[in-house]
Length: 86
Length: 316
Image (tube, rainbow over all chains, first blue to last red; front, side):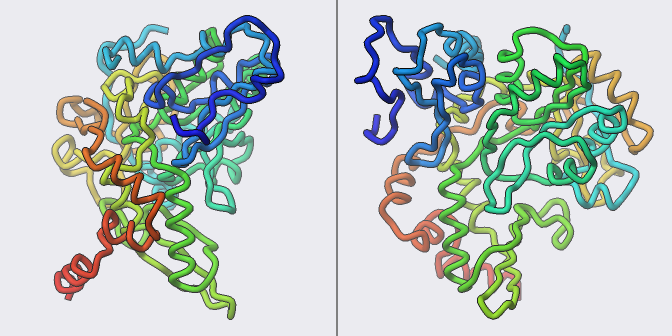
């Protein structure tokens, strides 16, 4: 992934030992619908344009409480799996 | 809510011609949203902002809703609309939420439960192109015409008819003169499918099964499905995906002319499968990031000297 296309910010400021949520590994997995952004209880997710001009979620590691509601709400990846795209 | 195995299909034209001309297709969105607003409900949908980006917006009046009509060939920023819609639903307001299929699927998942007062419409979409590409195109047109863009119609139906795809920009020069620029460069790049969001090539909603109650589109197969219905002023393809949609359609159909059609006569690519990722996609992005936009317009937008000459000769 290109350097500018961040998935996390402020990882250095977080001492939470739990893993950070993984919203997508490849860009093909994220449709940018903003469900993860909307459900986050601590507003730890921002939607930001990547270098090609598409919105993707970025997780602020310092604000993230590791509740993983953002992972669970992602229906796009689940529906891609149902269609056997991955 | 049980979804039908296959949707019920209608060709629809709003009876009011001015409504239809203000709409992308046949005006079904106007018919449904008029009904929702009349019931004191709230309409969520995509609007074009003054800076020619697209955002989702919450409308409670007809004037606000009118901004949602017409197609925008760019992605919409959802902002906080999912949260606002949830509040409205919890407060018992009737809510119409419109968007792409992935946005509707996302909204439903975010809500986490069914609401009787929610009605969703999705557009049968080909895929969304890059916002930055659109902005580069705008700057290029502004520089070429030495002015500032003050108006955009992504698909000028009024001047060229429903079936044509010509984008119209109004560019105001420093002297105050407004130039009308009709172009096919952006739509040509769009239809190369090189500049779509990566996930659109793997869209799970490219089928006749949609996450919204009602799915709407341009009725491109109208001459097969209902040949006498086409007047080139726009016909909506309307898919009723569940009983909710049948009920809604019964409430609004009196303001429209409609005809029941067969699904098999109405099939276009986005109702079957996603756009294939073109083999030159990587090259496109490499070019986009390194070349001047005039070179992109020429290589991918049909704006080379050769293709311009060819168009000139065909038109004269």
